[in-house]
Image 1: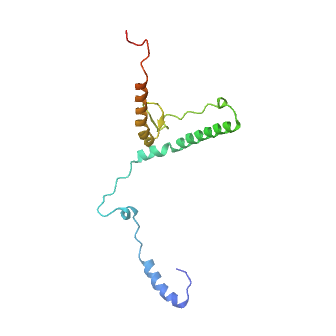
Image 2 (image 1 turned 60 degrees about the vertical axis):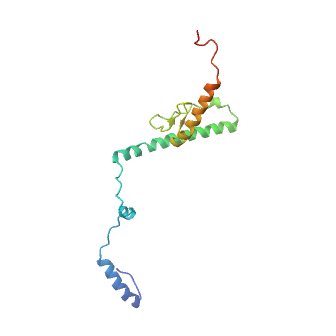
Image 3 (image 1 turned 90 degrees about the horizontal axis):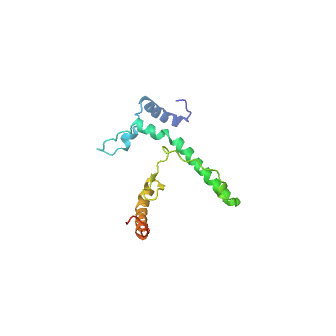
Length: 142
């Protein structure tokens, strides 16, 4: 192997080195190592679905960065004391990139987990508002 050793260590090393280099090492299989005994391996995700997820991450990232830039601009205007009416109109996120869920009661959009929390609350608020508002005079009763 070309390494240098003192005389005693060289004798020991030669035996070990020959033994190691004569045998071919087995390739390590991570999947087999990770699987519990008796468990069947899960199927790999489809290449098409993985490609779809990978395809628009860059566009989502750019849209997020643009939104952050607009938010910093608002903060800058507030610190300078300038009216917010002078702000440029922010770009809307394209629908194909917006994976948020719209609330059927208020129309706002939320992430999937946040929508699950928000929608029951918003539904209750909508019911309260409908119940507390009396019908308008001169309505449909004729």
